[in-house]
Length: 399
Image (cartoon, rainbow, N blue to C red; front, side):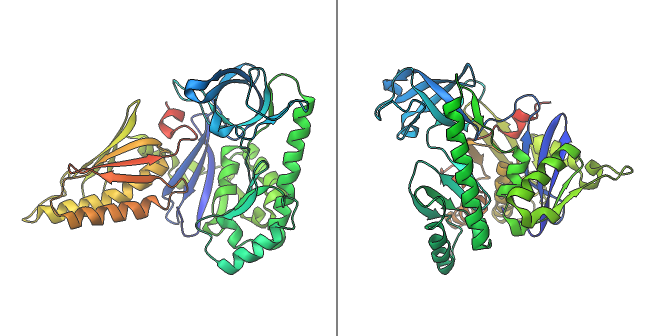
């Protein structure tokens, strides 16, 4: 979601590290959480061993992290990187040891999802060592700039591999893009070298901490300041910025005011508690009720006290449009994923429903994960699907 010169606030909360993307009014737009009890392993790279081939599932079961089970869909194993250099290319076999990456954290009843399609994420580029070709983010629209960046990358250290050029690269210098390409290639070469040395099924690459990844992934021009009151986090961020984003070092600030806590200044506890609440109030007097089940998340839109007078359909539309914006915000804020069903207030006019779907689609398109707005039923039920990755906020902060 694009903000106007907002900030990232990084602080400890209930034993976890939170990264809070705030707009210019200090309203939280996104919350990322690194749980103290269960750290996310998405992006980590391991040596995995195939323990079973499941032809009926078109998948394999994997052992990694020295004993942890994982699930490898075969469409993520089209170009496996075998540890044994004697191993000929071909279908996977039980006992094969591979370089693989975690693409999805485990859930209550599902193992982590693995992939052999490795990707290394930088500020400007997503590097694919096993794929070819250069593509661009959908939000990268400057055609002349694309030509310049493509020409630079075709003569860079990753010219024989693949990458996606991220939106951030639209405003980055060609020199910094080329430098990052070299850094990502060097990281990959280090991973391959490490894989040949290690025995068993260890982790050979740790992805960036969630709060560092937020700094890397947030559109640079949107952030004027990075604030933290945690010295360890400050040092880690400072080291990362100096190596990978030197242009942003001056944005980092250590908050050390002993009189007023960072929590109070930015209303962290209050806003996080609101993000965990079942009920979300709208300015109109209506409200959302957000509930989670094993299969899906339901969001119920209620008019509350917002409907009065002789034109209830106009009031319903007004409440629904306000709810659409808040639904999109809550999905990102809470990191909801999978199937999401929104029960809007029923409206009679097809034109009103069309306007509602257009507004909801626009707001959802601002989410970096690009949720899929499926359809609306005659009863006003709207289905949204969103890619699963890290666990939702309510699971991470189950306090």
